[in-house]
Amino acid sequence: MFLSDSTWKDCGGTGGTIESFSIPDPVVIGPPLPIQFHATLKEAIVSGLIANVSVTIHRTVFGEPIKIPCVQNIGSCTYPLDVCTKMPVPGSKQCDQLKKLGVPCECPVNPMVIQSPAGGLSVNTTAIEKVSWLAKGHYQVQAQVFTKTNSLFACFEVEATLTEASSFAEVE
Figure 1 (cartoon, rainbow, N blue to C red):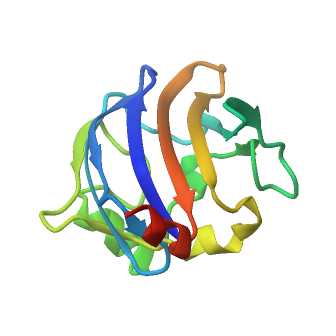
Figure 2 (cartoon, one colour):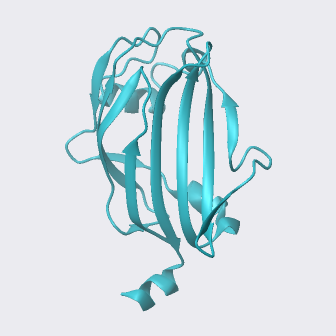
């Protein structure tokens, strides 16, 4: 499968912004994906600050965006989240990835600039194959991070087209 024609935007929030974000186009689903980004954490993350992440996914069908429902925690779902209780254990692979970005593996996380390393940050794309039932199509995804007082902390939107490998080859 291929992911192509991707666009992104920062959609607000008081706690953090994403100034730049780029991925190769097209993306081959399976091998690790190198992403480049530059973000600013404007507000310190402390225990209990972040309450949840709301993910909304729309798929374009006959020119109209249709919201994909939340089914077994996949789709347009809200996930409870206290970032500080989910921080990776020091010495783990996940903690090592955060350290490469200059992010500590414990709270508080003070305001800072977070930037991908020179060669990009390698992200696993195999999870996309696990939801292959979504199959090909054009998608809009929005992730909103809310505080315990229900204030918007951060927001990120991405649009992309998911295409089967044989379909992508025909288009080229």
